[in-house]
Length: 564
Image 1 (cartoon, rainbow, N blue to C red):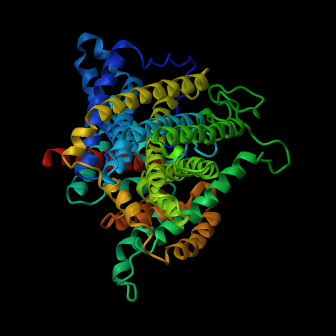
Image 2 (cartoon, rainbow, N blue to C red; image 1 turned 45 degrees about the vertical axis):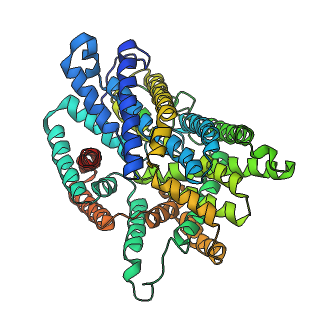
Image 3 (tube, rainbow, N blue to C red; image 1 turned 180 degrees about the vertical axis):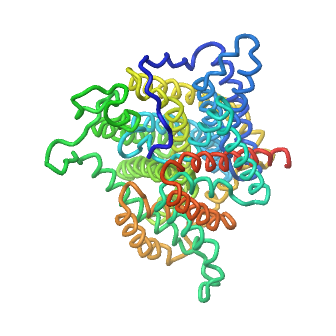
């Protein structure tokens, strides 16, 4: 899905700026510290973590406009992209991937588990980001997919750079998104519907609607979807099928209608079935090609499973549970923990790719329930839940950042050497993300005790701890999980891997956002009408409006810090 009109320059693209250039490094470190503090504040006071990408981009723009001490180089959109990557990584890394997992131990009354959980969370975060870097741009996680917050960040940067009509559209829609957020309405929901896959977002809207209105449906007044594990069952079924679809993608060597070898992509992203040049004006847009081959995708996912298992062994040792379990039980725990972390990562990533939301809390709760069902002891279960909670958010957030970079760099897609340029830029973004994660780890390591002693814990961590302590009190939960896994699996299978209908329906069922369903439906209707009356060229303006709505919603959510 293309949202960008590419040029056809004859010259090679410029060298991508380095994440470790002195001035760039100073800015990314300072922004990462800011992002980490923002993440900790929001997750402990409001229970949420805002996407700070747009904030980082705007700060980088201002620094570039100031132009003092050589910082005029930040007028370069690629440097602004590195800045927004770092601050966003620090925000989600500190709040979701690090503080939330270790707070589970504190809430459970086991302060001695804090440092082991932090070690496990940091290692899980590292694996999370590595797997995304190795698989982004593949057929399974394509750069051409929606990744809505990534488009929002990129369009904000582009509008600031180009000005004119694009800036006005973005600013106007951003104001609308901020106003909606002020009235506790999700401008991001409408924005996502203008960007993502129509069918996937329709299912997302249906899930939101069922979640909101099921209490008023006759006969369902006293039925709680979450208490009966209905959304969780749908997600389990959809998630299993999603993994099967991923395996099919890995093993499928697509054939053309004539039975010839399918189009493959090389490691540098260039198509191998075009005997001609990949130059200006020839063949399909190289930016649309997969930059990771099926073989590379397989290696990336396979290495993720192995690394998650290694981290699980490390976590078992440093947490002390290895000495409390028999060898067979320990082996079972390690395998289950590794698979749970990997599956959690994939489900969260797929939901984020299509909707811009990642239901990390809900998916972690699924594995908590499964752990209770199979009879895991309390302490190994607490460690397992903390480990699962650490994976997924960084995976999703880096996907957004890579999408933003891809949108900004594809202006050179018809230039000689574009493939190397794109991969170089993505590598520098990965380095900037690592800088953000390291800063987040330092900030959390220094501040967690003062937060926890003041009673500032992420609400979801308290829920996890209380659920483990209470045990599985609903005897019908297992049967409900199995029953509702069936429709989830069927819907996911019908939609295919490109639409992720089952995962998106379950995501909507797990999210409580007042009237968000109507915003999704309205935006989808507008999108269909505009496309029908003005053609596909109107998609670019719709994408820009959607990006503005998401950006405005993100900026307004940051305003909650001031209002607290």
